[in-house]
Image (cartoon, rainbow, N blue to C red; front, side, top):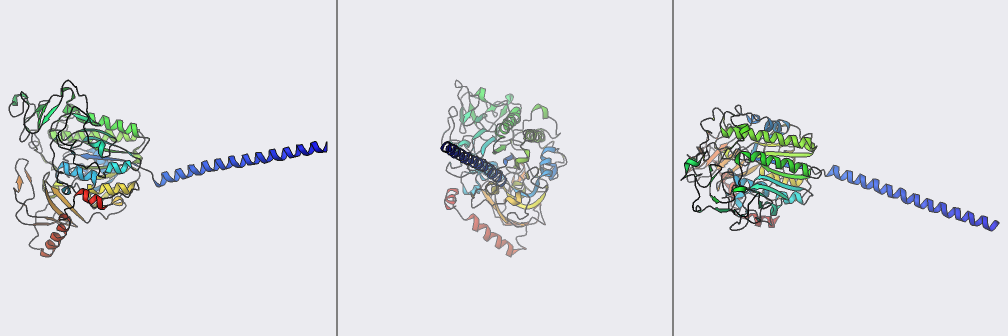
Length: 532
């Protein structure tokens, strides 16, 4: 009996030890799980990965928004971004034309470093090297899904494009997971949408042909068939006719794939909303490149006559509505508070840019450039100083900033936001400025307009001598060309009326030397990347 009792006692001791071990293991496992959750929560706090949206207008001037002084146009949704975020008074596109600015925005590299970064035809090859780092590539490396919806105008493919096969390389090969674009501009052929490299709604029995050299036999043109037009060309837009609008370049076929101009804003808005809904549960980057108010100005019938300024004003009102609808989607999907929005334009304004559309006749008291001199194509301020707004509901304290910032700086600044060490020699990390935590912006900047450059430093801007006409009479814009150096103090003379070259010999010499120290560095974008 004693021996059996001892066995029972040993059994109970072993059982209790096993129970103790199991309990300790269970506690450890739960503890590890809690610690893992805590670590994950800390990581999310330290690295929140906010969504990032760039809303990029096309030819919108500094004076077009109510928040920037416009009194004749109503832009409540754009104004809401400005009053709810940081409105920059010295925000710059890198260039006074579209392709170069878009190149700088996505690469963080001055466009004059790339000889191909100029206004491109619709059949041009891709000008971003697929080996080059880009804003979407950088964000992808940090866990973002990336998309572009809207205007591209940075070239597609290499060499002659076959529009009836998958077109590559393009946006998807330089960092975008998703792309739904128009190849160039609304006034250039091909007039089709391209989604992830494929033409949308293409009928293989009606192949597309495109040429910028000569017309296809039997195809009508704006020059030869004016009776077919609903919008008459003023200059440069008299080639193939699509939807009764004459275009730049020649196109044949692809009838089922051709867009309806008046539906373009709705088409891209619907896709942008869908992109948000599909990606709301993970960090996303959306480059939303609107086509307004670039020519041809074709507002949907809902907006015709809304501005009182003809089609140009109407498409700005249309774009404002689009932005309001997009913002509402962010709110409805619960991501507005975790989304940084950057709003700007690729260059300054132009009124008559190739069509008779009442833009001049109905302009009235509206001043697209505000108090600035020049416009699109110009080295004067209105060419590159544009609306520039950062908005992050609940994170950015609303205000106005006089800091000088450039779209070039988005690459390094957003890299800093997502804890990437990627940068370029030309892009500055101004994250604190963009978030309203600092007023110390850029000290200097080279701006560009159709292969001409100028130099901004502090309150001063230097425009070197350039041959050529002082004014583009077709679009009625001063280009900034002169036979002598021009020096302006923008703090005292925002309208650039007083050339101070002769009265400030020391300042002009200083500006010339510092300008050449930058511009004479002929290293290409690829060479600079190898140095990083």
